[in-house]
Image (cartoon, rainbow, N blue to C red; front, top):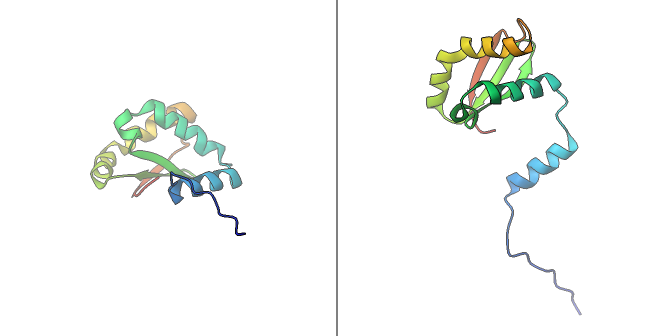
Length: 105
């Protein structure tokens, strides 16, 4: 007799499965980026932090991924203020440049 597999009533999106697997396999090792993400979430307005997050840090350049191009345009005007706010918390000249990218995080 052939054994049948049980079927789950709910499906899980592959994005959720992959992000869980990736986070378990490759935990975030960049502690400086982790620190900046914490600062980002406390220094900036919630409407910005819900739609834009730091995604990479290389040298003094911080890459911000933003969900909408409209917010990207708005953040271009706030770049210097954001750099100053982060550098106040992390130390002078930690961030020298911010690059903005539209996408999902």
